[in-house]
Image (cartoon, rainbow, N blue to C red; front, side, top):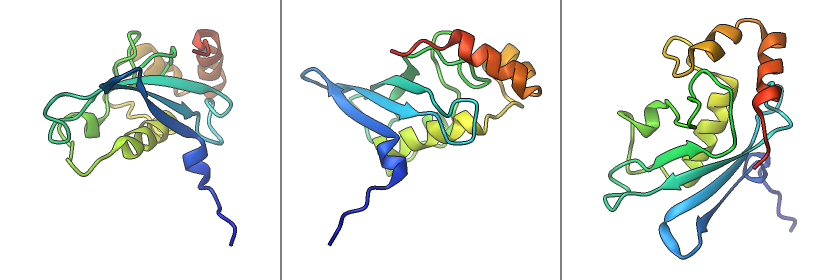
Length: 135
C-alpha cells in the first residue's frame, strides 16, 4: 500500500525552536493560484502556559505584505483572537493563515495600504514581491 501525502501538509511545516517547548517555528507556502503561490513564509509561534485554552501568539518572521498582517508581522485572524478553541492545533493554525493569504478580510485591515492595493491585483503583486525576503 502506498502512502499519499496531502498537498496541504507538504506546503507547511512546524518544529520547536531549540529546546524551548513553548516556542515553535512554522513554515507555510503561499496558496496555489494567488500572488503568494511561489513564496515561502516563516512564522513564530509562542505558546502561553495556558495553552491549549489560550491561543498562541503567531507572527510572520518573513516580511508579508497583506491586508491582515502589519509591518511587524502581527496577524489579524479571528481564530487567534476571539474565535480560539482548545481543539485547534498547530496544523489548523498554519492552514488558517495559509488560507488567509488568498482570502483576506479587507473590511478589517491591519495594513490599510495592502487593503487598498488588493483591489488591483497586478499592483498588489508588485508590492508583495518588492517586500518579500525569504527567511
